[in-house]
Amino acid sequence: MGGGGRRWHRAAVVAAGDVNAPVLLVSGVRRRRRGAAAAVADASLELAAGEVAALVGPPGSGKTTLLAIAAGRLAPDAGSVTVAGVATGTLAARALLGYAPEAPVFPPTLSVRDVLAYFARFHVVGVARRGLVAAALERSGLAGAAERRAAGLPLPLVRRLALAQAVLGHRRVLLLDETLSGMDAGGRRAMCERVRELAASGVAVVLASSDLAAVEQLAARVLVMRDGRVVREAPTAALLRERVLEILLDAPPAAPPPGFRLTPYGLQTDLGPRSAEAALALCREHRLAVRASRVRLRTLEDAVLDAQGDGAR
Image 1 (cartoon, one colour):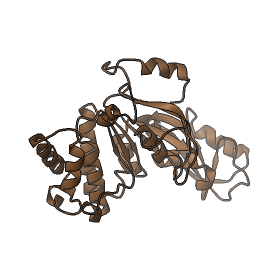
Image 2: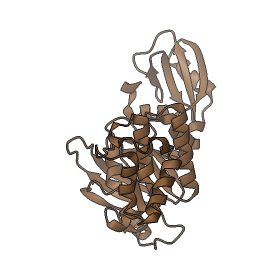
Image 3: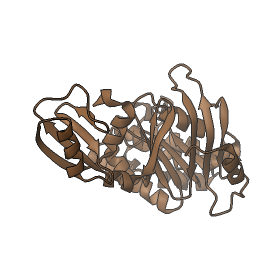
Image 4: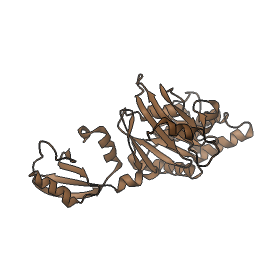
């Protein structure tokens, strides 16, 4: 993430067929806030084939805007996006990139089958189109709803249809905006399995999701956004291995010791290489009455709350 334009220029001129070249390059993208679209400030992202990365952060942090720019739906004020070496928004890029927006809107008169047939015509013709639609209905679990009007579907089926249309054709990049949110447990599991299948076939996936449980299952890398910027990027496994010390106090201090955060029950700190005993010793130096303490592993929720600031805790 981040980084100067020089590195991105070298990467962008690599041939699209190079297996080591990123299939999605977002370089120094900026966009001022316009209407409901949050601002994005100097965001960069590099994604390899078969990789699953997640954007997380509080509402209004710029996740949806960044995905829409990457999909070619919004124009940036500065920066660039390429898909397999092709500028986003072009016909060639649209054939390579699938996008499922947060709030998909389908024509009120079209059935689920009609919607998929409409999008399929951009990829195949004739009998092959019918086969592509039939396969999409089956793999998305929508075969039983094929003749229902798309505009009247409940949210879980809307999410399935959004994913089904986004993956039609031979996509190399898939952008999913809250596509896994609002699902029941069974539906989410099926959708997660579908995303895993796509990644295993070499499709690069970026998902923005408030469903942090799904993110933990799917994403190999997490990017935390705040105020249009990526404020942290790390492998998911590394984030979840970090240790957090929670301390229950008899009375909270007016201000926390250095490196600690106030919580409703006392204090909290990321241990890093420190031992819990060393952190507790610092509390004693500040004459804090510790009633109890425990060490737990960090969660993605912690990362999002950190991005929001102490006021969110």
